[in-house]
Length: 439
Ligand code: SAH
Ligand code: SF4
Ligand code: F3S
Image (tube, rainbow, N blue to C red):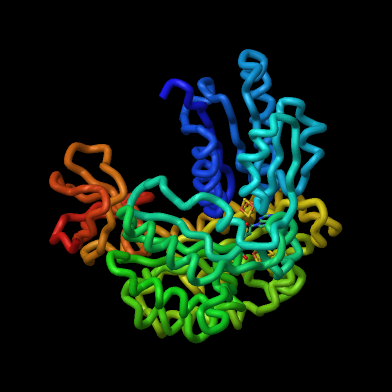
């Protein structure tokens, strides 16, 4: 096709943005757009943005600055801003940045093709009345054996530091039937692993055939889909880890032994100031219950250091919690004051102190990550191949614990699920020897 228009998409932020970008690409495919990875060739550039920390937001404006030259050279070029900065700043983006043609919030993606067609500068940050995904075309793009599926969106928790309740809106869950449909469609395209996504995924309460379903019931139903070998879900809030979900980790083999369970801090005083609504001890007891159900589960978390008012003792309490749990990996961030959130009103911890704490915390997490990987050496792992490795005959995939694993397997194909024995651990991955092909 000579008249296909080219679309360049850049995605920042969380996995939900990755999912949303895929859906926007599909929606625009119906208007004749095909994707390109060369921004210089693009007829349209779509930036799917993140607002979570100041640095993330600033990336948008530095990228827009770079696009100015390109637009001067290609006057027909359209530039769209989507995602959480679009939601938070709306019209302001058009004012600040003349290269931008369209601003579309995460809840208005179904209107993107019409906005593109309209051909004038437009902003849409409305929240829809129904499941926006049902207004988008069915999923067609096949990207590999592991896929994301958004089941829940938005958040009602209002942690004192966080913009998500403002950018993604109130918590909503997609209906069970639509999710089963979408999951079956993915499996029919060769997907073998699905990660269910939500800002508060374990608060899922979608409409089912007989009333609202929780995440545990949804996961159990999805596990019954023939050909779907693996399920994961992210991100969970500790207060929504219900008993039936914990039990599912014990008795559903398809549910992978990995759980991302952000705690943010180990100090009760800071947890309270953050409005997390649980104590450090409650978190530790929850971890105990999860490990009782699935002893080999690998836990991951998010931490914020330098939250306003954090003292040295508070920070030490966080390190204590990390030592008590033993994480397989974790993400950690220096607190970033976000306009409009309650914590932004408070006096910040000096940057040098926050920087030093972040370094200490990351050193501890890195050590824990390495010992979790070392503990795998000599043990068996199931690996789902996602791509060829750098060496000839090598495949790379993920284990149940979400470790990247390299396997020498000249016959291996993307999508194969194999059993392998781990032989070595390096900084960010494992090496393993093929034992047998499972499927
Ligand atoms: N819904 C998830 C996380 C959403 S944001 C949850 O409830 O945990 C991902 C992570 O970014 C958060 O867990 C937090 O650690 C970090 N984060 C959010 N707002 C932040 C801020 N203002 N400054 C620094 N880190 C932040
Ligand atoms: Fe943000 Fe997560 Fe807190 Fe919701 S629960 S406000 S998404 S950190
Ligand atoms: Fe960022 Fe929005 Fe995700 S702020 S982390 S893209 S929900």
